[in-house]
Image 1 (tube, rainbow, N blue to C red):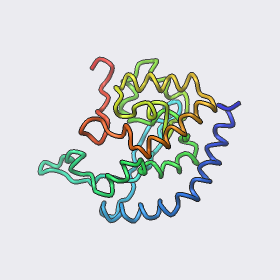
Image 2: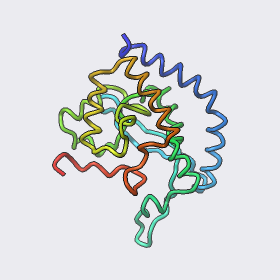
Image 3: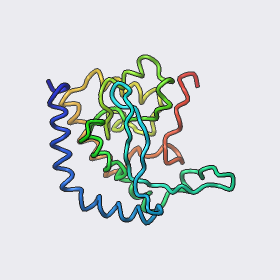
Image 4: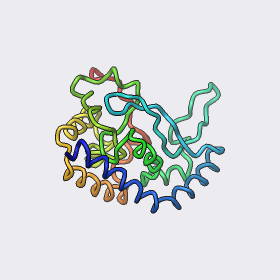
Length: 202
């Protein structure tokens, strides 16, 4: 009952309630990031959702599009703006994804939606992470986030799929709040993003 109906009902109710609280912050960040990123406060990218269905994710844009003389994007740390670093530190870049939750492309809690290019690289077991809607936060995020290896992250994602319940979602929700305030597990080493997944043989 929870997986089929109540989880979706909770998503909608919590997003509508949260939107009222976060609207002022959303507007302020939109203006600040628009200034920092040449009028582009949002980042859009295609990601696979439930059953691998492709949707367009929306996040706050924390890095500029600055490139080197050869036209290649500069490293993350060189493109990160001061306001972007603040937004990333406290996971505020995830706020626009509430729109995706309302649309039904995502859930508040579930495996994070990753790159479309990863789809053919998953093992059969790892691909089971797509049996549920992807989430803004998930079991892997509250158990290490970018500090985890890809294999461990996928193992935790599949664990979530197999044990999805109200109690597990509630546990993840409250652990997420604690981790956001502590800024734990956001980065991996000196990079602002996780190393790209290149397959299980790497």
